[in-house]
Image (tube, rainbow, N blue to C red):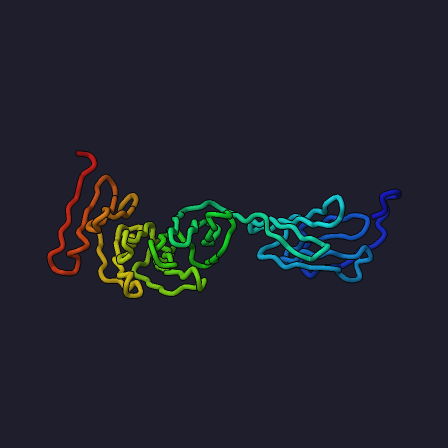
Length: 271
């Protein structure tokens, strides 16, 4: 478009997907598009001079006053800067794009683990506050997370009722179990890391042996659906699991579960 007479001078087709943002100076033009690419074009648009692919749609771009740096933002919550002089890209900020529903602190790795409604699980370095790992689960939404107290692993409960164990160093799922057919709303390791308890939205509880690939050892079912579920362990001796539901608290001795001598007690919060 000519500024002086406001006449359209030319039309160029630069992308096969939608262009979300554009910025231009006297030397070049920058586009951010749905195909996740940031591209820098010569003003004749015959070919691009530089491109950088991102993890999400590039929705915003801008050029510094000296023309040496290009800033861009993406729909997956990241903000970065491309340095044209050395062609290096630096991510300045990452974030979830929806509400965080659960989080835990991994003491051994010094990472904060967050779970969000944006279908991602992210690990953040506590020293630098940078995101170090991201797991995406667009089909089965993660709902809750528990970090192992010593090993470089953590476990998550999902919408489908599946519990998955993640290896932080290998960035992969190392164990996968489905004990429920409804969402898992609470999950917790014992203080010594030997046991893992998962609680379903209907109040069912599964106990896993974390020393043996998280194999399930027992499943308990409640006679009525709870308003909410939560799990916690007594400390320092691992003896009880607390499952809060409605206005009651149920206590079970995990040391005796499966031995035929298990004990339980229930406290009415109205009393």
